[in-house]
Length: 204
Ligand SMILES: [Ca+2]
Ligand SMILES: [Ca+2]
Ligand SMILES: [Ca+2]
Image (cartoon, rainbow, N blue to C red; front, side):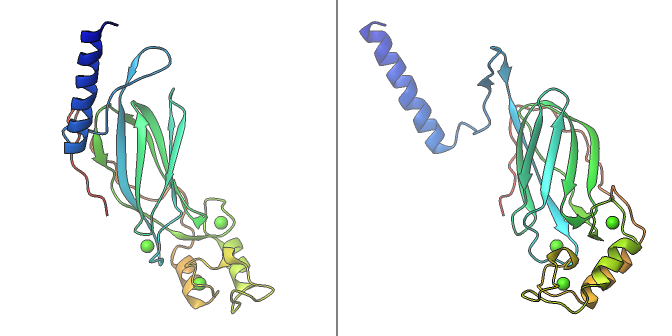
């Protein structure tokens, strides 16, 4: 590389840094995969709402791709998540312990797109994580009824709303969801519109 080439590369680098600083270059850029093909990432955003919890952190969104593998992210306290993925077709799962999970199958995901999945409300009360809320879950909770954090027979699994006590609030929540099963309702989003211009999305 002669001197003029080095100057051109340096100017290019400085220009890129300037454009990045000014926000003209999106953080969603094609990257070179190991096979030499260009891969474009996109971002799913959305919200997972845990019934009767104000703090919706700790729920997981998982995407299993046909060829891209598995990706996952956790929710913040607001229930908000972001998941960055390479283009592929994915099966999506929204899940949290003690709650029934939701699924979306065969979601085609195109590159260079940022879009929002519909909010999903996970139903509480599946203590034993067998995808149904039934007498087994209620019996487990009933056996620990009235216990609180620090009690020897307290079990956080029975504390559905995670307020530190197993009481009528937990029991009525599971009761209201009695005989519900996975997957819970999760509105299917419209297919994303192919675009190389990322749409603005809200960060809470
Ligand atoms: Ca909630
Ligand atoms: Ca169950
Ligand atoms: Ca509770």
